[in-house]
Image (cartoon, rainbow, N blue to C red; front, side, top):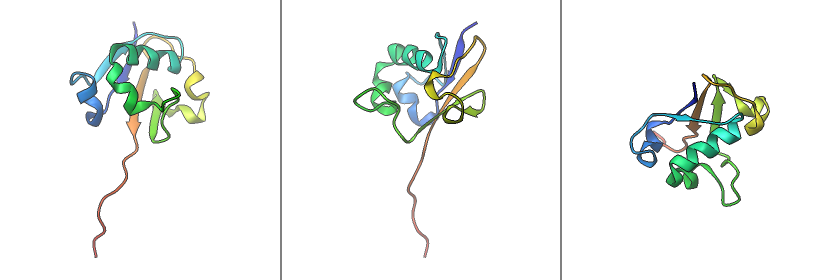
Length: 95
């Protein structure tokens, strides 16, 4: 059994419309690398030029924010679920 990555609707145009993608790897970092190998156009949305996750991209492992675990070095096992949640800002002020 592989690890599943949940892709939010706002990023599915970079994954051929797929919302759930099976990846391999033994850490969040390796799983994200597997995801980006399958869908390279997603890289510019998730990563900076030097390959680090963008500040506005939140990654959860089984509902736990990886920033409060071991970040992308957090170990994963088959059957785990990684969820990508980009922060959303903006809106309009009602006055």
